[in-house]
Length: 183
Figure 1 (cartoon, rainbow, N blue to C red):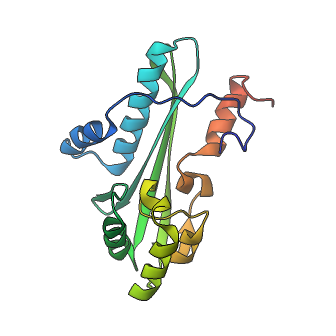
Figure 2 (figure 1 turned 90 degrees about the horizontal axis):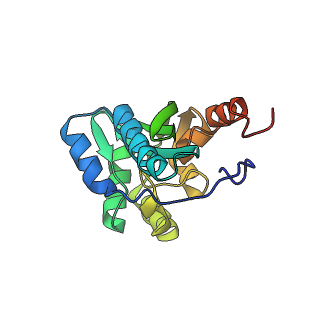
């Protein structure tokens, strides 16, 4: 998304054990919003300490239905179970972005999109998984809205970019204020 929007950047792994961090934060009964924010900040702070002169962006996304959080599926069967649980329900995708400078957060934005998944047959689900697995294994909720996942939904309220995992428009505004992007 950043590349397509013309944002100069260098991608780097934060070098954190995201699963362990997520487990620890979830043990504190964090809301999906706070969980996404905390994980995004953790990533940004860690890299920002290594590169204190740079603006470091950390992002995270959490898919949730009520209190249930849907991690990325590790198997086709798990993806199937996630999609069956979401079928006919309205869930949320919460995307958080945090920018750090010199090891400290200087900007953050958290956005939520609501997605109403339509009722669909198990046959449709099998055809979908045949076409999309394993690509959807890295996707919170088990779908890629930019692909066949669009067929799963009856209604969507919120930013397309938030659903893809980054509240891009607020980020671009901040980068223009900081002089990173032209105004």
